[in-house]
Image 1 (tube, rainbow, N blue to C red):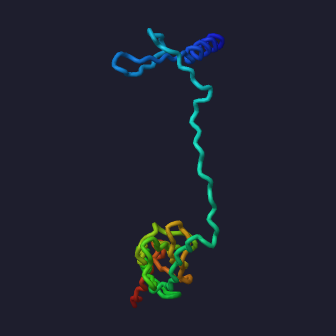
Image 2: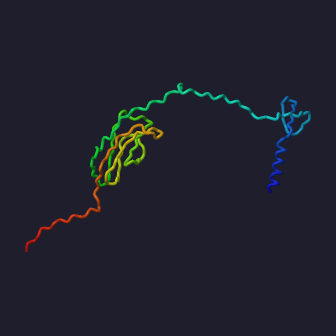
Image 3: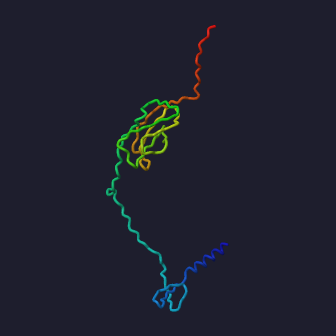
Length: 182
């Protein structure tokens, strides 16, 4: 099988190198063919018919000539609500985080909310986050402004809050009954 394939490739390779003939007809049109025609002359092809393109030389621009990167705005931001160490009572576990920022964030920047060190939800363009079904207990929140590459541009200080939810495991209270004197 391999020998047959090798012979077939050799045969095809010899056919690919054919003689080229050139002739001019009665109307003055030039024709090329791989079969000889009356009054045709053989065209000698050069050994190397590859295209050689000279690439332009690469010039390195010195660093002092490069355009300076656009300066990032200096944001001042804080969490406006809830306040530090606030106790929130919500049986559904709802918390709304509201941020203040100056100046207004650039179009390419987004807010990201972190609760207990983990990003919560998707990045967004407004600084109001509505959370639901948050577990009871102490939580630490940070809001960050990120650029399009995910690099932190600004951040709020850590805000600690306490969420209180009623428990279905709480024992029922027994109402004391008045004694009946007999």
